[in-house]
Image 1 (cartoon, rainbow, N blue to C red):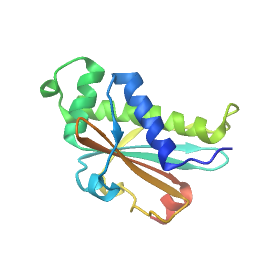
Image 2: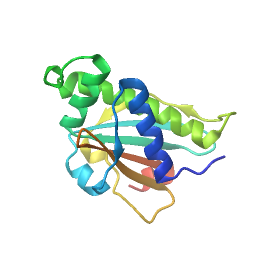
Image 3: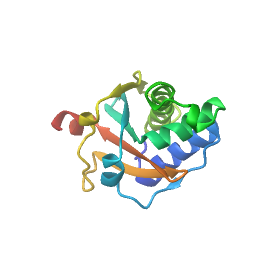
Image 4: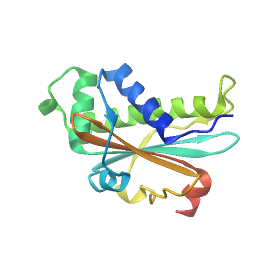
Length: 159
């Protein structure tokens, strides 16, 4: 099994954005805490296997408008973040979650992925930079942040 790093989590997410919606993204200079503070929508997907855990995506309305508009081929002004934006965020959580379990499990992936769901911002786990049980990173697309948090179940249960 492989270890996940912040750099690899960012790379997996950036690849997902490029491949699904032709959205170009880069690592952000802002902190995970700043990105979480700007969050208006949160999607979470759990996985099970040798270790359980989750991937949480924290997005602003602006990020959702840009991502969903690229995904759907419409103008950003035509996207309702609570409707099309929320669906797009759940789909991105599904794609990133699948990439994470393949990264952790390798070719013979012993993990299973749950269904993505929208959750309240109160569910966002506290950022713990010193933990080996959690990775939090931020990318930007069109100057809009997306915070990606991966954590093992031990952190999820303790939070």
